[in-house]
Image (cartoon, rainbow, N blue to C red; front, side, top):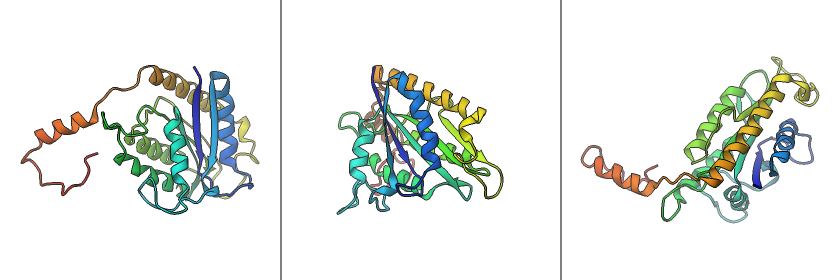
Length: 228
């Protein structure tokens, strides 16, 4: 079964600058390839993507084309460096733009566009922040419909304070990172195959109707705000 992975590299560096996050992304790509996965990496800062919470912010917005690729993917991976202990501002931008998919549910089931996509995260940086970046990003993606399998993150962090990053520090030889990269690649692919054969059938529209019926007179009106 052939699968497609789209990886969003949320480095702050525009091409052709060397990206440490891309180096670790490439390791995961190499591990998924023999498992039947074709991968495409998109460096977000190379595109005109304005801030916003919709899927199209108007003239010149290049996000819709990227979103179309995510919709067609089986596996969605966000790669981010750590800055000031958290994921990059570019990764935050991506999550905020994905917020627009809540309003683009399937006409019949109401499922969000990222339903049945398998989510993973790659993180690089110095000091700490890897757990925070992975936890928040995977949580966000799960709320948008993605499935998060076990061990779906891979990270490398250097010593405290400024210092060599993943490439210069020889992170490609780091045992723990190499182990988690393999965990991640195999679990993402297994779950993607499973979901492709047996997608989640949940009808969100019906569940919303059930919730509205059960909530009558129990809470103030939502004033038209969408139920998520």
